[in-house]
Amino acid sequence: MAEMDTPTPDLRERVRIIIHEADTPAGKAFDVALILCILASVAVVMMITVPSLKLWHDTLFAIEWGFTILFTIEYSLRLWSVDSPAKYARSFFGVIDIIAILPTYISAIFPGANYLLVVRALRVLRIFRILKLLEYVRGARTIMRALRASFAKITVFLLGVIILATIIGAVMFLVEAPHSAKFESIPKSIYWAIVTLTTVGYGDITPATPLGQFLAAVVMIMGYSIIAVPTGIVTAEMTRVDGPDTPNTRACPNCGVEGHRTDAVHCHACGETLHAADI
Image 1: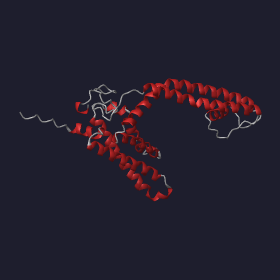
Image 2: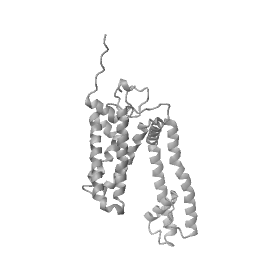
Image 3: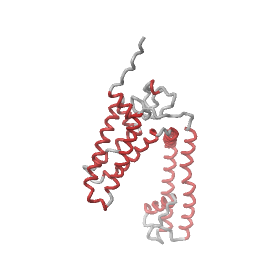
Image 4: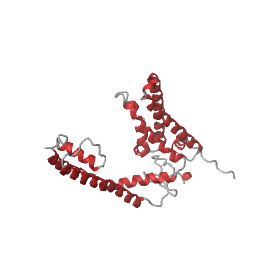
């Protein structure tokens, strides 16, 4: 008995495999070409700001518009090729894709907005898919999970720092205002407290009295310990969420989200069944 022929994927499915998958020769070639275009586009935006290339600005702007139109078509194809365009649009790469093309269109109304196109460099993160650097993919997921898990703790911490900076600023205003014109108001003193707590130390405002200098030294020492707190929170969460799962570069046919475990049957984002050929 003759073997049954494998059904030929339709155009939409072929486009999805090329654009969203990195494991096929066509998909890898597409991603390499896309990254080269992204790097060229970022280079063009940088060249537009070089004064010595002013005579070429019109040509560079035209080239940038060409890249934008190309990326717009590519983004439209990404949405068209998946079953749930809205889910892909809300995914990490989906958001980055739309942010990468909006500044050029906004610049038609607000000149200069196109300089924000350097955010296109974020799309180069797709190189991890091309080179199959799965440990980097796993590392990115671990960091994102840890940041989400740490959000509440870090929010409380930042609120505490703001309250502390307000109190310190008010105290420094009482101590320094009669002796230094630089501490002219409580908001200005709070600015000094934030700069000192974060150990930035611009030096534009400095205490003049011995008591003020003593308080400044205490705030500086506190700053070193405060900086370590959010780092410890995120590190603890990274240790907790870093499990044994090993994601790969397979993309969900429904929402286009990547980073599924090797043994995954369903998409971790939308629950859609992954293609049997991808498992």
